[in-house]
Length: 209
Image (tube, rainbow, N blue to C red; front, side, top):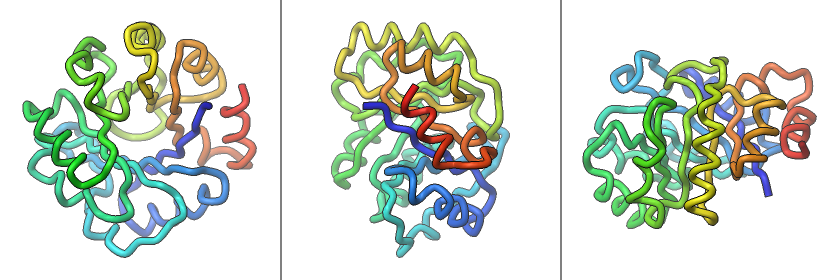
């Protein structure tokens, strides 16, 4: 079953809450982009303290586009967060991060940039709940999908038939159709949904290709 996850990529918590309200009736998850201006030049909202006490019926996954996530991972392992995704390229402490996330009873995800070889996932296939292929450069919403990602999805699906593969960035109808065909499980969409006249219809269209 394909899951469409709205991506929230904003500069402040007020806007984050506003966007979550827009998609809350139509989705099960929301994807919170967190950029520190070091791992990526882009800076987005990145204050976990503001999530304390925040209530939503959506499950939340946090995508940490931050340098050395081991320095702040514990701050993100709080009640509203269900899954934390960190970048393979941002750390040398992969096993440590996975252990810390699991000890907090959260799901662990590992992400790679478009230019990173998919084989970097290989040692962790059985250790994380999710593999994320970032299809654009880490940063702002609205970038164009990198078509090399299609081949990566196929390779990963071939060697890891049960893996949960998430695609993030540049998702639209034609991209989604090909991602699903290659074996993607979760599609993260931002500008495609929030720029649509009807968010519910846009989600349904992606889900039912």
